[in-house]
Length: 450
Image 1 (cartoon, rainbow, N blue to C red):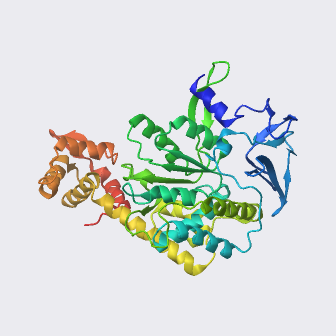
Image 2 (cartoon, rainbow, N blue to C red):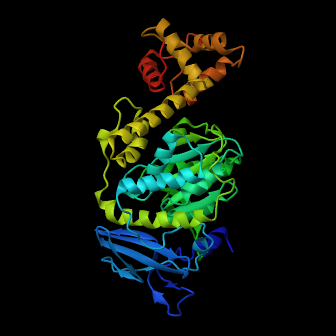
Image 3 (cartoon, helix red, strand yellow):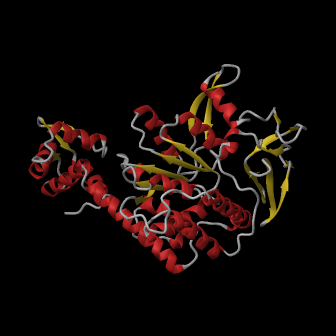
């Protein structure tokens, strides 16, 4: 069986519009389209799974939170939606976690406090990030009401609590799918596309270049709606067909190192693990009660989604005006979930502090140092061509003792990293005068000043 065939078996019913739903708890077979979630006009449909009865159903809400559990639902397209089988491997083996039924969530502020209390019981996080994580959990349950979504990341060495944080927080997110860097990337594409939930990925550094490149595609395309990843798959007739995998959605990852790609880095809201000792009130191992506590919160969060989804909207006034454009884009959905002004200010300050730290770290990289040297050289040649050799000399004077670099390397960085034009003039390579405005803009974006 091909890899795609294995994935199709794992998912249960990927090409299932022509197949039948089979629940091992029932003998009758019902034709229909297996559904995980749908937004149909003003109706919300969500798959639920009762682990005690080992049955699945569709939670259907038509009137802002009023819901029924239904075995099938006919929709205006002519389709009949049915729940995925309770025998689906991903559901049975808890690779994907679902609520069992909607439960009254109470007030939003109470729900947030209960999420924070649950996180606090099991994970040692900074106070600021604990607040961010609680609202991020809430965001995952309505993320599809926005056009962008940021990612949450735990960054640190082994033994610093990254996996504990992933397990604790991931278990209460919207349709979390758990995987690790040891997994092949193909199932991640398929499951993300099918369940459209929260990808919870441990050991996401992925040292192997091919797998890392595929994962980066998921991360780079997954923050914005309408940016699928095209891949070729083999169908049951052994025909190769391109397929657009939807990868938009929230993601929680754990890594030991930052990614080299600065654009990719800008998609993460990061907590550095290992900086705080494990509190005395936190057990060394996650308790058995965590599973029941997580299910209770997922049930309440499902009710929150059914009640609030159509009311959720972006709140641009929640943004700070002096933020980097990418940070504005990534933080808007999260800040839009915060109603209380004082808590919103705390989240704004936490995001701003992280942005400043990321900027400071990026300024210490060799690439940014080259740009800084180009900016200084530009001051000596206002409105004129800038010799690349002069930039190389400035770099050598400032950093050569620590990291000697050739003029050829300097020119490569200018062209390939910053996309500046270089050309030969009077026997030497120069940056043309018309690129000076671009140098100024690039330096301003990276916080470089002289």
